[in-house]
Image (cartoon, rainbow, N blue to C red; front, side):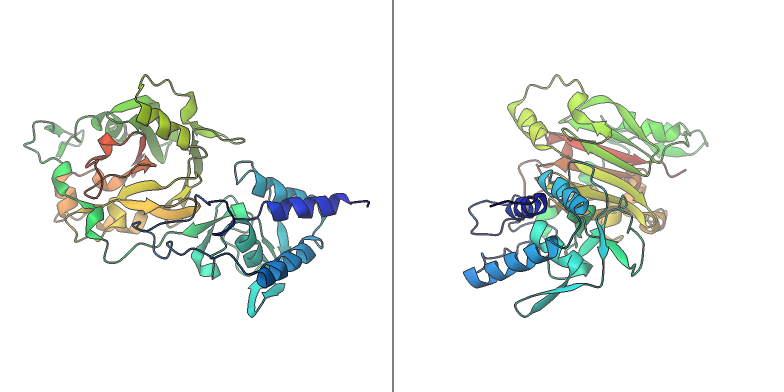
Length: 376
């Protein structure tokens, strides 16, 4: 029987839908317990034959109404899992679809089918800044590209005690690894723990062109030069089919540790770092969790820092401008111990650190990033 190109695209898209538990394929974005993102331990049981057939029929009927070029855009995004740069998929926002007793908007249906089967409400989502629909309120046409969206990472409150680690890591002024230095303004500040002061020195240079710099570390050794960021968005990756940014795979590393090499290979699409009006967001594009420590993610009155686990496909506001301003009060324990800590974010790929892990400090993690913000 003669098959049209459109029908072939629809079949390929259905085969590329997001797996649910029981499909025989494990989605590495499905989450177990113990993270700092709430509500991500939910797994979607495999649908019964009736609802699966209903969902398939509904999805096919909707996809067949979409233009052929738009189907190609959707297929490119879905098959590359967001690795290839795909344009927006602009479709009517008011179209609703019904599966069983549940009604979904057209964008929500596509997001559920092709990325997150456990998605319940649009409030769980954050649109990426690269999308044409970013910042628009109730447009007639809205982007339905599933890989122009991310899931919001909701922080637990109160945070679990196992994710805390003591402030001892921020060494006091009399530590042998840290000593006072006179700043250009005549005040006295304190250098960071050994190994971090090199990257922090860039903040003292008075350079204004960049909004942040990124340092890549393997355990206690920095690899490559500091990467200065001027553009609002930066991809940091090991292997990305399409795109520009900070490619960790091109850096020359002499570390032969099997663990470092294994983690390096798992970085994959890495992360996207984006400066937005309310702060700096980190989007986990990889297939494995990342771990983030930032002073603005914590309670200002806390004497400990938290390490937050961010699952694949999720975004977190890693640096909040308003909170950073409030943290600069002279009585804050965090800033009296280490004046620059509030303006850095540390991100570890795959491996976490803290009291619930064998690694107490990030300098023991195989592959990690230090993001230093230019707040001048």
